[in-house]
Length: 225
Ligand SMILES: C[S@@+](CC[C@H](N)C(=O)[O-])C[C@H]1O[C@@H](n2cnc3c(N)ncnc32)[C@H](O)[C@@H]1O
Image 1 (tube, rainbow, N blue to C red):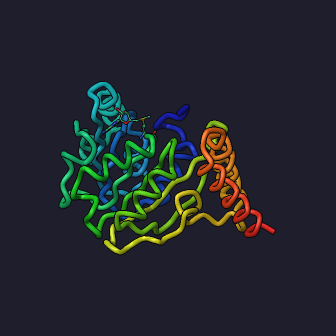
Image 2 (cartoon, helix red, strand yellow):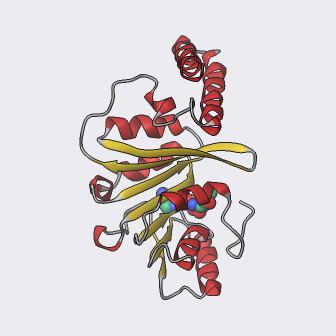
Image 3 (cartoon, rainbow, N blue to C red):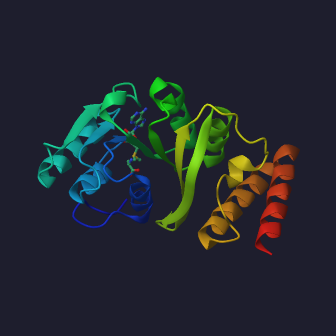
């Protein structure tokens, strides 16, 4: 994360920013340096933001950056474990970025706010995106958009999800493919190839992973021929 608030966002946070609705009140969960809320308020895409973190040290870093950006009147720094201190009437779009897929699942599953269908959740798992996608699909969330980016040489995915309460798709490959279009976009293909590689590594100890790797590889080859 080699950017600063005075330069552009890196491509990972930039993709998260793209998924935020124009005029949305933002909550950035696990904000650390508060780059994203500062950027979104500075550019005028968001009128106001909550920059929250579970740990006092990163929150202090965030608060310092907010003060030096001159945006103290529009960005509130708040100590919060996940969504526990965030209420529905103060936010529209909620970003949870830079954490593992399992931690993002934990944060969403511990809060009723995640089931408010007016809210948009922008989720950027650093690892185990398949765990997050499987949970979203199995718990009434729709994936409205998904894209990929490369930051520091690694390919990541960003999801835009919202609660509908409807049953998800019954597809073994959904956690790996989601809404990606590897036949159209090179980065989506690269991300999916990474998942096949991970599955093949895990397959050394389990036939289940080896079968999923085979199915995913066949699916990718079919779509991209
Ligand atoms: C690697 S930083 C990500 C910073 C920024 N969101 C980004 O993507 O660049 C992860 C941050 O999440 C915070 N965090 C971890 N668990 C959390 C939780 N349950 N609730 C809120 N913040 C959390 C950590 O303290 C840390 O500051």
